[in-house]
Length: 146
Image (cartoon, rainbow, N blue to C red; front, side, top):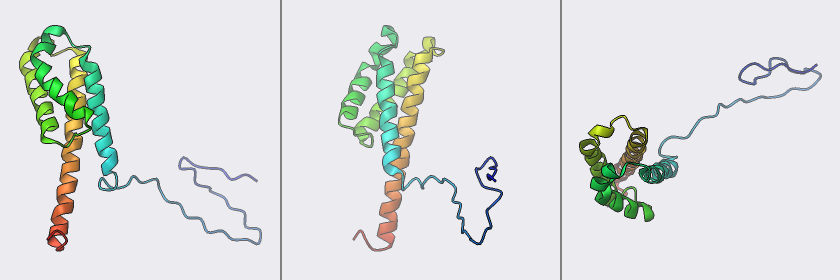
């Protein structure tokens, strides 16, 4: 007789012929953000890469005022320095300049996609910096950073 499985793939019948089994089910649990710090940073870098690729498809008259911020962002990305002040400032500058320059393009899907990816990258960098600061603070409280 084959055991039937419910939605969670848990057996609802066990063979009891002179044997016993211990079954331990552990749900798939993602690690904490601190355990995933490298993944969070890599996701942020991926978002910057996607944003830079999408920037090539923006209208030329929109891109020209954003060129300086884009150049700085590309330089920081080439070094994979998402946490650097230079990169974070370039993301902030690009987003704020895009708001000022892009009023005519507010419905442009490409512009919206670039904004979403840059915001995701900035959020990822914020989260990683928060985790690193928490680690330093805890180390300081425990007397490890003296």
